[in-house]
Length: 113
Length: 112
Picture 1 (cartoon, rainbow over the protein chains, first blue to last red):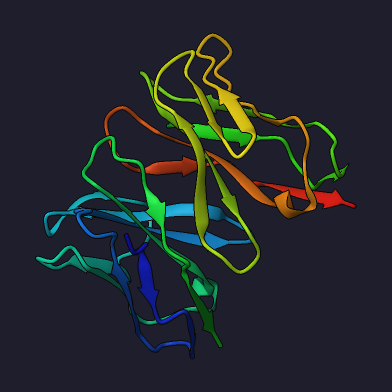
Picture 2: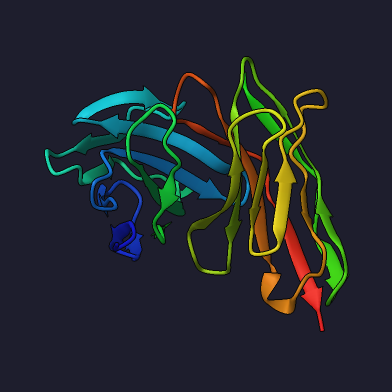
């Protein structure tokens, strides 16, 4: 089975711009979660989607949003980028909440200048 | 809220040495516990997991036992290799949801 794929792998943006990141889960997995990884804050949960509905949301400002499509693919969007949004954004998929083990993609590295 | 505390690194060992990375957690109810590993420039790989007390997770020579009485899930390996050099994250999910709560990560460096 193919693993979780994320596109793009690298991205450079400037402050004030917006960005959309994409995640394709493992085939048959219906739950997708997003995490932000930074040297200062570590790994932090952004949100989780299941059956096109947001099930859970972390403590991030409203500039961070996401959605899930009927084929379980997910996108996250960050509007009005700030320098502090520079991070590795990781997507994880699992068969179905609440107890599915999560498998991670390679991440999208975002640099905001 | 739920939290995970890992021993600070970096941990530097010689090849074939014994490895222990301590992990303790705070959570209500009965969380599931995980160890993930991250190699440079990559995402997280699931190393092992345990879903109930006294369960032992194991994979690639690594082991960890879910100890509810001490709220711990320490990672061990009997003989490390240079290829084990990576960052190791202890994590939990509560019994109520799928959100992973991570420890800060422990850098492991293995010298030949």
